[in-house]
Image (cartoon, rainbow, N blue to C red; front, side):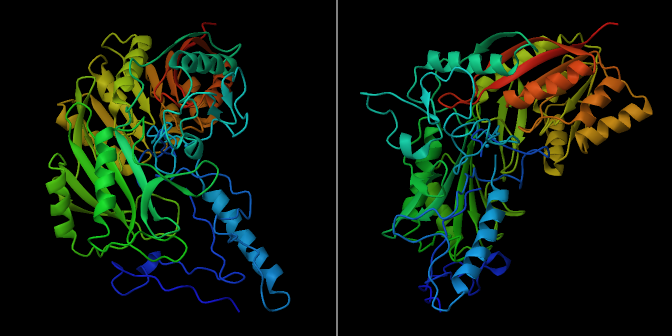
Length: 537
């Protein structure tokens, strides 16, 4: 029979096994311990529904039976009874397959994509998922200087001490101009024969640009508390003190929290046993306002000494404007749970973008690089060429950022978003900015447009910013049925952008010009904008 698992402290579990979140660890072959699951986004990512509870950790391929450093295997250990080994292996194999299905792509925050720490590439936190490329040459095109998914720099000391272990900033060692050149070449290859790429707009300072930082908490083999990200193509947590693409104050706050856990006797959550309290810490910072939100993701609503913990954290960091406890008791790779409790402050922060003020909650999708977001939206509206009379449809609108910014130059704006929390944020943001010519609807973008087309509704311009998986034929066919004259397509995935442009071409839309915007310096991800116009017959 399998050996008994060692007992673990259940601090913060209220004497229960994490309630509904507790998952019994399968004792396979001598108490073998399975590797931790990951779950983007860097640069960001949200699915079509936007931000919110759908946010996951960036996962990685599990090529079955990865051996931990302590020699334990994830499955197929020995059993004492004849025939149990094969049965256990089959059961664990099914479990691993389910875990593979749960892994992310990487949104982002833009994410769009997400690394274990939802940091790094696009962490792209947002709707979009990781995975434009596969490790070891999944990217096609001129990949000079990029090998095995990471830039090489022989003879030079790495800028990042965990550059090789992390794998999130694949181009960190490459000169920035070379990064931009590679990204432009990649974009041109994906849009070859479809759209001329006019250029790629880079950053003056491509470091510490991420205003959203997410850390995974765990323990190392010696039992020391660590926080960091998942190693590329594994579920091993790489300890990170400072990250070159993350907000420095956010990293500092995460380090402070890590140091406080022992004195408050707070255990980090163990996904294998379901024991422990703290799972993740999320820090968001308003670039223009400086407001800071700290989100403590716990496995149980019971948080011992939470008032004293909050007081101690505020004393060390008085710049924090709000602290939220998010409860995630599910045994999945989702980062955030449904329930939240505001422990300090108003429960959200605000930031300024292109002259508009936006309210940002823990689940809101908000681009992780505010400097380049203004560049991105500015270029999109430049291509749109609004005169003040147009009816604009903002598809996959999230919290309404680009639609509300466009409303000042349009006759009216219609926003559609699947995630109900994001729609609520969009409505509130319109009120905050005194905008009355924008309305937002909670619906699937494709279905919404089908209904509009059937009613004979008309719009002059469609601005679409779909998830990493791209748009749907249903949506694009409805655009054509409505006779929309102009489309501005914002994409975080050149591959699905190219696919959708081919569909739009068949529907009578030609791509006039395209631009790349480097939202995620040091990584291989690139944002792009394409202007399409309906061909005149």
